[in-house]
Image 1 (spheres, rainbow, N blue to C red):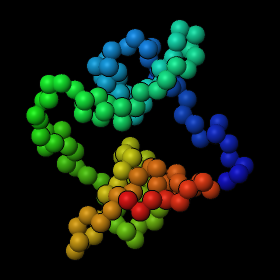
Image 2 (tube, rainbow, N blue to C red):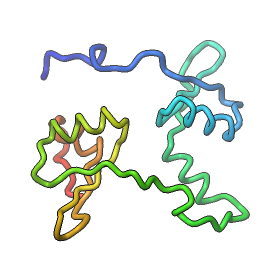
Image 3 (tube, rainbow, N blue to C red):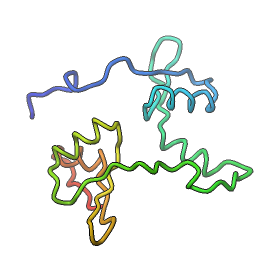
Image 4 (cartoon, one colour):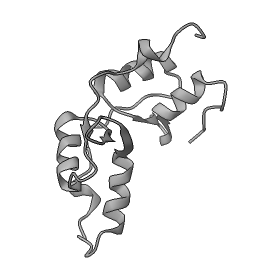
Length: 134
C-alpha cells in the first residue's frame, strides 16, 4: 500500500463555509449534503478550521437551556450491523454502501458485543496504531 497516494483516495469537491456562518446553517448543510465535516475557509479559500459532527455533539451538550428531549426522538432504529466473524472487507463494504461510520457487532445469543468504526479500520491499515477493541 506504500505506492497508493492520498490523491488517489481523497474526496474532491470539499464543502466549505466561512468563519461567520451560523452553526444552525452549518448543521443544515451537514444534513443536506450527508457529510460529517465542513472545511472553514477565508475569502481566498485558505484553511481556517474544520467543523465536524463531533463538534455538534459538544454544542448540544453545552447548550442552555437544555431541551430535555429523549434519545428515542432522534436515534436511528434501522441499524446496520456485523457479526464478529464477518470479514473486514465486508464490514468496510457495508460502511460505504450505507454511508455509515459505526457498525455495532452483534451476536445472536449475547446481543451487542462491540463496535467497529472507520477509525478502527483506519488504524488497521496504519503502521501507527493497532485497532481498538471498543
